[in-house]
Image 1 (cartoon, rainbow, N blue to C red):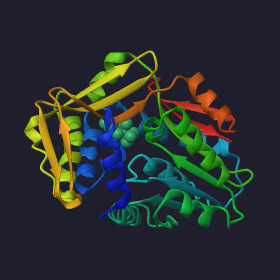
Image 2: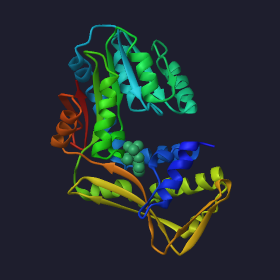
Image 3: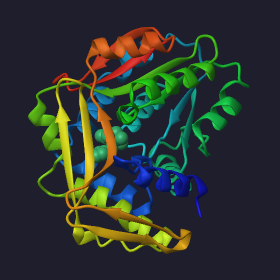
Length: 312
Ligand code: AVJ
């Protein structure tokens, strides 16, 4: 059993305001549901970032001003769908670089590598499975060639202000002089557009959240009755925060037999599961400043929904 998961679970469910962390959404089933989310038209983030990397690959690479060869190190590569266009541009233009995707999931890495070897046979690819920072310090600090780090998909939105600053500082301390970071960030926009992306009418995001209860049932021999829980989410356009919750539909007790714990849920009690923070360009500049980065360029999609921001 994953001891960190156990610790976070007990801690989160013992709090006055219960929490479960979205970082545990991504078991095999959860990763598949996230693919479904990315395929919904309402989840505009996918298309917006895809557009940026498709139409502005040349501008992004030129802005790097790197000598060849260089590395592109992707943190949390997942299925690599978005990154493909950038890689394709580089390969088609005979640019000399190495692609180093890092992901915690061996399965995701195998799929990605297989797909890329088939579609871009000339690509120099060095997949690494493991923790970002362990791999980064090993791969990036011991090479002399410059690296572009990719942290795409608005994954930074899952972190609170302070956590995001710490994360960026950790990136920074694993970057050599001259390395750069391309950070994908979802921007503030019409609140209805954002609400529809997260509180989707198909119920896919609900399934994504409820899957976490199924995971706990399986891994901790627990007895969450999934029909007795619902999903709620809310976007606050003032602070840019989407917060997602699981709602208990009645007074109930849940046992986690494997770890000998039980938790009570009251009628309408909330479990906070996820933060998906939206930024203004000014907010990104602030985050950059607080973590010792400098914004070199914002690459936006045509609707100005999303930015891939280049930081040095
Ligand atoms: C993968 C963290 C960027 O917050 O938009 C999608 C996950 N949650 N729908 C996001 C997610 C609900 C996603 N990130």
